[in-house]
Amino acid sequence: MNRIILSNVTENEDSYKWSELNCFYKVFAIALGASDKSFFDYFVMYVSAYILYVIQGNGHLSFDSGDCVLEYYRRELQPIFGNELNKIEYGGYRSFIKKVYNELSENRVVIVPCDLFYLPYCKSYMELHKRHYMVVKGIDTAKGIVYILDNMHIELGASTIYKDFMLDIRVLYDMAEAFRKNFENICNKGFCWSISSERNKNFEIDNDNYFLRLKENILNNDDYVELNILDEKLYCDMSMEKYLSYANLRVVFYNTLKKLTTDENCKIRLDSLLKEWNILKLEMIYRNGKNIKEKVTKTIEEEKECIRGYEFANKLFISSVLNNYEIFNRKNAEISYNENIINIRLSGNEIYDIWGNADNGVIILKECTERKCNAVMEIDTEFGSSSHCGIYIEFEDGRRILFGSLGRLNMAVHSIDDMDRYELCMYQEIVEEKMNIGIEYNDEFCYFYSGCDMKCRHKLCLDSKIAKVGFFVKTWENCECSVTIVYR
Image (cartoon, rainbow, N blue to C red; front, side, top):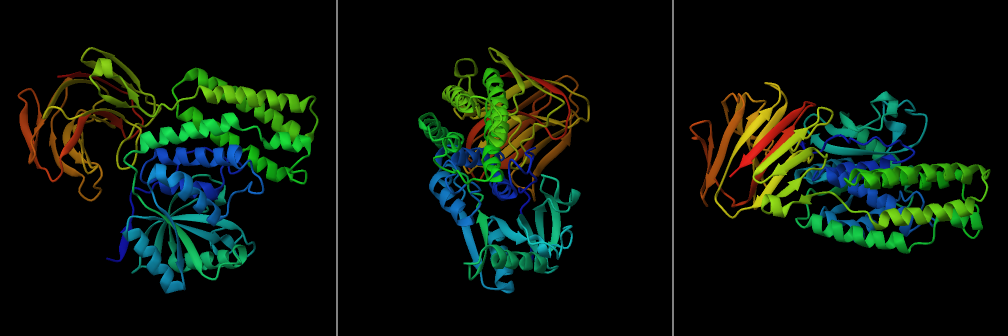
């Protein structure tokens, strides 16, 4: 096989400026997001917090040394995420192709450090040596091309979004070699990095525990760069450009905290704190404010008070009402409930997808205690819309199946982790107002029922046991959708 493409490696969705999140951090976040979209946010949050509150920028403000990040990731983050991060060395052009191909064939995303001097579509081509990093998601050795995520082909590199593109393998190799020679003089061999798609099954628990330790570090930290600059004890020769690269990371840290909580009061406090820090940042640069040290000290205390009460909202448990169902609702869809009725409303301003590695739809999930799941769903959305709702099935091996209505026109059974064979069954069934739907299963088969007569529409042979069942509501484009689930 000459061609490999990792379809789960997709463009980033953040809105950070280059002055806030540089391309070095961004490519690692994109690669981690291939196994779980939320990993992008957690990674940039933890990196920014590590620089702000742990190392305090002491001689490592940029923190953009590959080996430095590799060591940090393996020590701090790999136990949480589960994804292995490796440095891959190669000896020449053929070795480079082989190593990249082998990593991709093992479902590992490749990150290549580049010198833009040799990139033909860069405006400084053959004029200026400049660091850059590309995400490699595929390769075709017969055609001699790699499939990449990059931003240099969009708005001459001004865009902060990494989008799909193709590049000659030789060009990528020349850029990687130039990077080694111009920016990594101590390296005798060329190198790149790869990140596996393995996901820690205990991520939620380990991540919560790690964040508690991070909160403790923040609350116990009194060594802020701003105070050291003002006291002229340390960093007295620090350039303002270097200080700004540090201070701007607060935008990343604060915005990620806002994204990962549903506490509106906490979001308001974070916005207010960020405005205070931005004012202090200008006063620090121009030294034109009065009582700057007192203002910094006061803002630090306010920050600690906000962090002290912060909690993630990555999932909610409503055990007393929903009989131990787990609700996953990362984009904060409107959910209400009463006895055995759940009402879900998706805004037309958001996309709530759970296809592939996306993780933004509403999922209501439960450990299997019975071998069936039945419900009546009232669906309020336009016919033919980009809505999808029904029964969600999760297997012990991690695979997932969706069974339900597509835009109220068709019913389908989809395996959302198998991009080559995702459609297991599809048939026309128009949902006027209510959809009757159900499944029954044993150790060998799962049976799918729908319609007023609850007729069996599909029979699936099982090669893994069903671990959890529940319901889902999702959209793959912007459209309003309201669903009422009456479950039995």
